[in-house]
Image 1 (cartoon, rainbow, N blue to C red):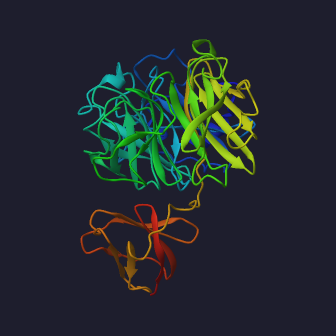
Image 2 (cartoon, one colour):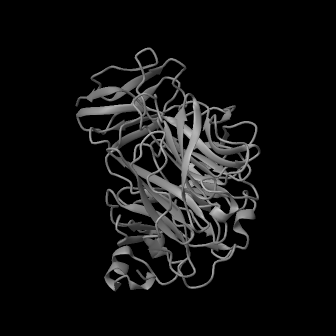
Image 3 (tube, rainbow, N blue to C red):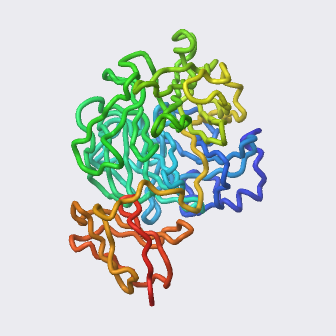
Length: 455
């Protein structure tokens, strides 16, 4: 598949101008993503070798067989409320891609800087804000969320979210940061202690995890419990992961044993080549299982080349399909071995898609979906309630620990977001303008209850 083979017709559909700075490309919304496809971050347009300067980034959608579906350019200049989201051409740890826990959005991070800004990852955050991009299933791009108090002079690498209403971000020097959607400045310094240098972040099984490879923590760490929003959260290396040796990046967690509560298998991308360690301890995709409370490495799907960093997956019955990204291409492999068994494949197959000349691939995720996946665990009635129900113009949300500052969302029964609000001390949530019907009320991504709206 060649980069410049896209039909002319698709350029009109996407509104792509020849200039990277084109405002037409900045303001567009693209066609909806297709459920089941893969989306990878590509850096560069192929016109020149990559450098450490700020470079245009694209979300590229492929079918599972490697057919190019569309290329989505991210904003390279500020247009309206959308800020530029450019990437370093050579910062290999940047531009990880995640999908929100409810499945509706893709997230990645970048730099609000002009194209060509030298050593963009080392710029001052006060003048070059770090940016979080949120891309919806219908193709809508939003880069209005900025950070001005973290990742100063160093990389921002990844962001995660429950439902797109708030974010958790990591990078090279600021631990885990929490911020709401549309943030324009300061963040909550969520984690304490070491390591402050983190590579990846994502939600699995209702908890937040990060990937690290420094300061005695190599592998996957849990951030507090659930979806924390307050400062002072501990980073806890999962028991069994080592204090040295790995080069961990993306990870994918699954529940493969009915006898072990919660997630019990983790696949971890490691960007070392096999020659830098002895297989199964070298680079590729490692498989770990939770055995007797300790994570044990079952083996590695070895990579013949360096740079396997992005990782996502999907589970179909007893088959786990892993999708990995490296600088040179996309890879896919199935594991049918199940819990606490060596992967069924010992070597990573050749890339089914390769990056065009003068470009690189970074993070990869499954395409977003229009209908929300199951939300995180529900509140019980002692923790949260809403009244009156049915309601007309407003509903009061009462939380055991106080309502102020929590994010309430109202979804229809198809999972589509209808209303979002940061709750005041009174807990009052305005419902005016919503049609009569039944809705799902969530707070901070957790289900409160169904509510009925009357005229």
